[in-house]
Length: 371
Ligand code: MRU
Image (cartoon, rainbow, N blue to C red; front, side, top):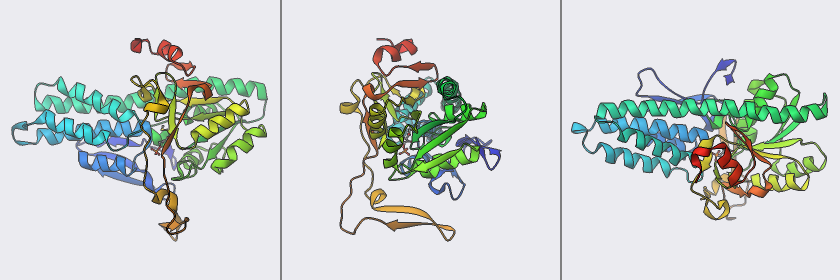
């Protein structure tokens, strides 16, 4: 995607191949910073402290983290304990953020691939190839989600004649949450680029404000008309007929169609159901958990530090400042995600097509996962 007119992806490898570069999202939209990552330790910190975030991107980052772990393992005397080192790295990366399934998906894929190498050199080459494949697939799958979702938006546009289609989204499931395009935003970019009139309601997404900070910035960079709203305004807009469809992303969707996404998604799905607004979830297949049946009971929900609730940060006098907004002494609870049960989801937009949020439809699109 474009930043100041220049094409960027969120993560890439430098030509000398030992350094991973990524956009450090903690300072957006105020400052565009690039970070160099040279060790698995550093990559784990970048994921845990949310320099990179979003299910797709943390999966890709973990893929590159495993490559850095392989380089480290190969540099040990006579490459002793190569496999133990990369297995420890996989665990370290997996533990950084519990809700997104992409982390374990990417690290397991790397472990399987590295295990096929006979020498340390071969294992490092395989780890690099796999990391690059994970990143390339992420781009291609998001691009295809854009094309699948475009048809849905076109259908609504036909009914609205020349009035803009109003899409509501939550959090940031944009290109910053992946390598490029995004999941929820891919159909939006595809519709906008095709000349279709479109307007996006961007829910700010307390407590970290990924909507007002990141999605709004992305849409501005791409010239997509949008307005930021308080999270609590979504129901009001739906009651007034000002939302044609909701598209959100997901961090983990069970093979039965239950959707974990940023906290606040469930309330939007309830409001959409009550107001007959279609509620779609856009996701690459890497975000489907083929082991979990019951999202409410089984998906681990990350709980984050209370300071994300008690404080907000912003830009003042050329620097990022943080201020307290909750009385000293009032405790806070900070749940990062919630689960939207499948019966509230109109459809899943995947790289292979749109399906209903139930086991039969999901397996029909992905027959390689048939039982
Ligand atoms: O805590 P974050 O910012 O990593 O949140 C994850 C997300 O970006 C959202 O839940 C998003 O909507 C789905 S990830 C594509």
